[in-house]
Image (cartoon, rainbow, N blue to C red; front, side, top):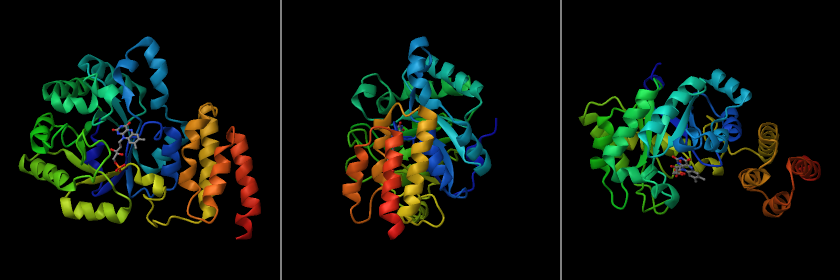
Length: 333
Ligand SMILES: Cc1cc2nc3c(=O)[nH]c(=O)nc-3n(C[C@H](O)[C@H](O)[C@H](O)COP(=O)(O)O)c2cc1C
């Protein structure tokens, strides 16, 4: 299997893994309005290796790895790569999960979550807790590589309680991961404060000093393509990953960069709702509702109308309300 990370023209951008956000539907929505020269990599939500390796648990987590036929087609057309992100603390389960992901034929790479700061995973010696257990972290990378010939990457932070960027990255780089995404915050910072891009720059320098091939992505607080390119020139990262910035502008990976007019936004919202209902049977309508504010914003009366839309009980009702809104308001604008 080729290491696609080495083949991506630099600099490039990636859509961050986000739980309850970057399912196949949201990824497809974003891919459909992105420029293929800019958006090169997308990630699944983080998926438990313990869950994948357990008969009952598997059922609970498997939707996170679902790739719809329409997203698959789009990925093939654009050349954007899809990486499955996994988490856990048992090397054996990483090995087995890597085998499964490889055999599924759905993914271009496997990413190991060593960054999630939430208590329930940290307690299990997983995700960002691995920063405190570098030997286990390295064992996990080795096991994942042994289970699959897909390129294995790591997404992590610059420390747990304190910033230990270089000490931690030396451990990771020793395992020669295909890529490392560095979120410029410690576990303790959660999402607070500013992402420390100086620390991300140190990772690039270290990688260069060690003559390593590992691709370095920077992550944290990026709101536009221009901002990403500034970070590339200032800190030398190969790529920039965007998470929450996509909520402010779904067209962030589009060459034209326009946060387009209401009509276009509502068209995208309708597409999002339709894809969601086709894929998930609209079972989890409350999850879908969280996305409405992305689209229904930035115009007079947006808040009031958004509140109405939040009261919709299902996908059909939401689509009907948008239709009414379009007929009454947008068409007269
Ligand atoms: C709702 C939400 C869910 C997230 N889920 C994941 C996840 O599953 N895996 C992961 O590595 N990071 C996850 N993150 C962290 C993001 O990938 C990213 O590192 C973080 O938001 C910082 O980037 P940003 O400033 O561009 O948002 C999540 C963040 C948010 C806001």
